[in-house]
Image (cartoon, rainbow, N blue to C red):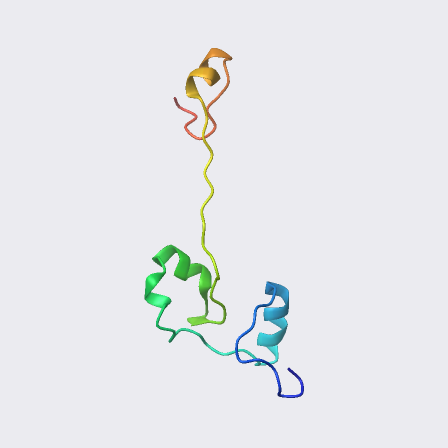
Length: 84
């Protein structure tokens, strides 16, 4: 990057992105045609003072399931719905 011969698009860790941003070596990606495809919740994670310096290559969600009958049988609290 220091030589001005860096790639136009590349992947870096977040800590490296912060260093490049501090040196003004990253571009605002807000104008990419794929940006409207992201959910509002995801867009809030991608914005930094109204600009976007990174775009995720993948977005996924993890979920947990529990057997509520088994929890009740063993007198355990349901931590997701504690009043149940």
